Image (cartoon, rainbow, N blue to C red; front, side):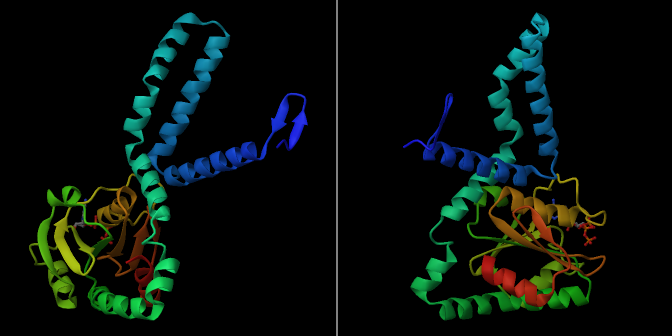
Length: 263
Ligand SMILES: Nc1ncnc2c1ncn2[C@@H]1O[C@H](COP(=O)(O)OP(=O)(O)OP(=O)(O)O)[C@@H](O)[C@H]1O
């Protein structure tokens, strides 16, 4: 089936679909690297490509040879340089395709009320701990993961495997606790580990007051399918990070909604 046939331009519905999908993929990739160092690297690579085509057209042989060889290893270089972004992109695709995470279906099949009730019981001690830590200006970083990747966390964390409780969270993050440095990781109904050292984001467009705690909270959500609550020791403000993006100074009602949705 042809939509257009202007001499050389023949357009079928699949060509349109092709263009829309490519545009969508590029848009998602752009969103993933926006504001990171990877965006500058991508611009650098585009410039090298354009330069290569220009010197090739101008028959500048030495530069064509050098840039040509550089481009030959380009694919490998791309995979190495954009490792984090490729990982995030695949996570995004997998997450959207995952049946279990499609809450509309999940709640339709297993009852929305029941799911919300069970979730609230899980979330309440976390919200209560956050309220008290905000009041006392206790810095905290709590990470939520659907799947606890032991390889990712085992080297840097203190393994806990304990029930989620307000008092335990408070004890971990109080200043004199040996475990207060680093993040707590929660998966399912358990506090899996504490004192975790997480990857830092390399975003360059973050607010000036964001130090290592915030950078680690955002970084872990870029590298993993995770969300994070960050409580600032300096201001007591609560932030929430997801997929490398952060919401600053959220209220407890908002936090409850977000956790209900993501946790
Ligand atoms: N890579 C990391 N992974 C997890 N936690 C980290 C990491 N680096 C630092 N932290 C935590 O962040 C704390 C230092 O926070 P820093 O003051 O730099 O952060 P901040 O974002 O400015 O937050 P605050 O507003 O609480 O000061 C450390 O004591 C440690 O607990």
